[in-house]
Length: 250
Length: 198
Length: 175
Image (cartoon, rainbow over all chains, first blue to last red; front, side):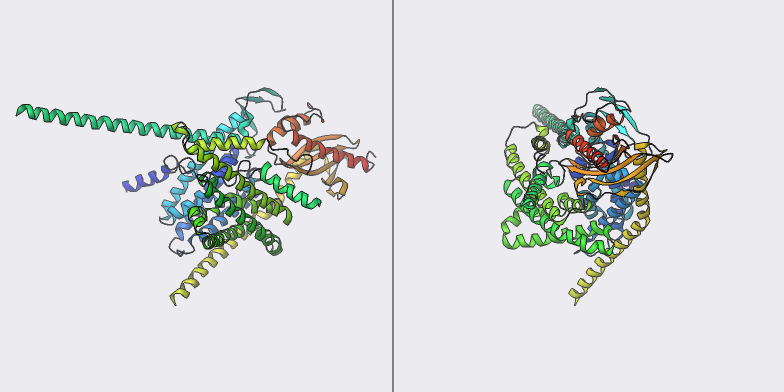
């Protein structure tokens, strides 16, 4: 039972950091660059993506013994497309502001490499509960990745964090960081760099985050190599000292 | 005459002004994945042109003459993706028969055209904006030609980047993305190109 | 024999998956269809209320099919306490940056009033709202002051509003 618990936790956490679908496997980049202009849109996109991923993983895992090998891919695609269409209709009905902000990118969850990838690589080979946990982890990791990109883009690009435009049950709040704009649109000060709201900024933020992660990984590898080399030198010195002592004794 | 001019301008406008990769963000995965060699980028771009044009030609009548009269417009996403998946298989078989070297170069990236956001994005976008057949065709042609243009230019630059002296943390994907950012900046300058004409 | 059996099994499974997916989606469609219609009506009403306030009563939409004013879709007559105060025009247009659909109030004196953007898919959407439409509605920016960082979008908005005003004048408005 203890092994089971550790396994589930590792399954869940791997989607967030070690195998983060956006920053490590670099999949699903299209919505990541297009919907991260504001933090609210990123949260909405991540939420819809997680729902589709969980549903598709669970259903594919349930049906994994019934689907023949040859039609695996079209079958998975139809399953994913079904859930995406249902989610699209529900969003249009109950969160129309999110639907009009995300636009065609809700439909594009169908061709998101992550959903199809997890269905083929994991859900078709593992049980329902494991697939569910895997989907939760991957979805959460993707959402956090989207939010981190949107954080940079919105703060630098528009200068303030706006809540309440999409999730209309939150009152419209603007948190001023680089720009302070009152509710009647008078601008008190504006230090934002509007480049980051444009596609150029999306590429730059993505490159920056990937560069930072590569830097950290390189440092870790360098540290590990250094430690291993020190260990080898120490062992060689010990062996030499031992052989010299042995020689002296003789 | 005016229709032809509008058609050509619509293609060029979809290709340059709201470029499919650098402005609308479709097709980023193959854009970053296939562009390490110019030849494979060219092959991928041409295959995408074929698939998008054929998909537009098939999906528009499918939606307007089959799905709408039957009252099941909501099945459009499922129908489109099945059409695209089969089209990609067919294009793959066609390339395998006529140009086995290109087939080997493309390798795994050919089935990945199915998950190219540009193909489904164009088909779904034509439906969402309720474009006429000619406008959909212009949109499809412009999008795919824009993709071909950008991916070939990007691969030419990226080949040179491989031997450049980039900082270690930026090697590979980050420096490629910064290059894409600079290209996007260049394309931003093309906006407003036809403000007096169309 | 087993080849044929394999084909049959394959197509039956695929058919089963396809038809159950169609059923599920049809079910979702049934559930959400009315809600979507209600959303659109509520959105139109909310947009109208932004123009002349929620105290005004708005008549039904009157379609406009004039080729010279191709961007105008329809108008809603507005009145406060049975006193006609103007018309709310719905217009839509597009430029190379995206589409705009808006509601604009034109008073009985053919003056442009408040603007409410229903759909705004411009590339610089929030700049357009924050620097032109918002300040204009709050009376702090002149109608012709379109250089705002989203100039092409502002010009499109201005052209749509002017089209509504000109249509109003051409109808001999002001009675």
